[in-house]
Every structure is written in C-alpha cells, then in structure tokens.
Length: 144
Ligand code: HEC
Ligand code: HEC
Image (cartoon, rainbow, N blue to C red; front, side):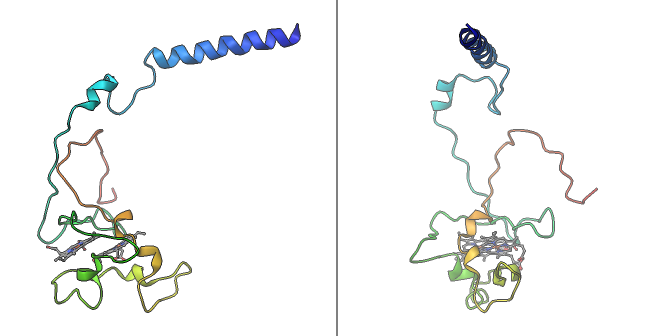
C-alpha cells in the first residue's frame, strides 16, 4: 500500500509538471511562436565591414572581426587568418598582429610561436551584422 501511495503521488507531480509547460509558463526568447513558424526562410544578414575595426567594450575583450570571413578556413592543414594576422605577414597585409596574449601558455609564460590554445580564432573573435538584439541590453562599456 505504501508503495502504491508513493506511485500515485509521483504521478500527480508528473501531471502537474507537464501542465506547467503546456500552460506557457516557460517562455523562450523567440516568444510564443508556433514551432512551424520558425521554418520560414530567415533574412540573410550581411556581415558588416568597418574600417578601423569595432570599438572594444572592455580592455581584454577579443575584438570583433571587422571584415567578412566566409572564405577563411581554420582546420588541421591551414589557418587562413594567419595569412594576414601572423607576426610575419601583418605589416605587408596592413592588418593587425595577433594580440600579445596569443603568445602565452596556460601558466602565463611567453612563447616563441602562437599558443595552440589560440588556433581556433573564431572561438573568440566573431564577425558582426546588424541583427536586431533578441533582448535589450543595458551594458555600459564605460564601466559605470
Ligand atoms: C586578407 C587578409 C585578412 C585575412 C585573411 C583575415 N583578416 Fe582579419 N583583418 C585584416 C585587416 C586588413 C584588418 C584591419 C581592418 C581595419 O582595421 O580596417 C583586420 C582586422 C581584424 C580584427 C580586428 C582587430 C582589432 O584590433 O580591431 C580581427 C579580430 C580579425 N581581423 C580577425 C580575423 C580572423 C579571426 C580571421 C580568420 C577567420 C581573419 N581576421 C582573416 C585582414 C585579414
Ligand atoms: C581564447 C580566445 C582567443 C582566441 C582563440 C584568439 N584570440 Fe585573438 N584576441 C583575444 C583577446 C582576449 C584579445 C585582446 C587581448 C590581446 O590583445 O591579446 C585578442 C586580440 C586579437 C587581435 C588584436 C590585437 C591588437 O593588438 O589589437 C587580433 C588581430 C587577434 N586577436 C587575432 C586573432 C587570430 C587571427 C586568431 C586565430 C589565429 C585569434 N586571435 C585567436 C582572444 C582570442
């Protein structure tokens, strides 16, 4: 009997939990849109190119990429970002040299070559487009 009671209580909780979700109390950032609506083709946004780069929001922020990267490849054989951003190439390409922090190992010691931890550039650096933010952001980059 004790076992049966526990089972019934369990079922009541399970039903209550399910109806919470169906009742719409859990909201996604998309709002209450039918799932099928998302199947419509979205507008493809253009990557914004900006001369001089984007302003950083804080000192150690990985700067955003101010150019397109569609043709770049980062894989086992090549990293085309380094064709322009490596210490050897950046002057000739009028690009920016990879940051000083890219030459430090995990314990902060200086390395001759770029740390392997920085190989996958787009893990931290991303191109930008004029997307409308999903939610408002009141972040103040001046630190106030
Ligand atoms: C053909 C050369 C070229 C290639 C390839 C290239 N970049 Fe750039 N990149 C530039 C130039 C030139 C600038 C400077 C643009 C400016 O400031 O007007 C720049 C700027 C940047 C900046 C901004 C730096 C800052 O301090 O604001 C980042 C970050 C960056 N690139 C990352 C990348 C990544 C990641 C890749 C690969 C996915 C890449 N770039 C591939 C030429 C290149
Ligand atoms: C783990 C995150 C991370 C990865 C991976 C990474 N970066 Fe960065 N990058 C940063 C941060 C943080 C900064 C700002 C601090 C600095 O300048 O070192 C930065 C700065 C830069 C700058 C600007 C330097 C300056 O003096 O203004 C360039 C250019 C850049 N990175 C290019 C690259 C390229 C190209 C790759 C891939 C080969 C790469 N980064 C990989 C985090 C990263």
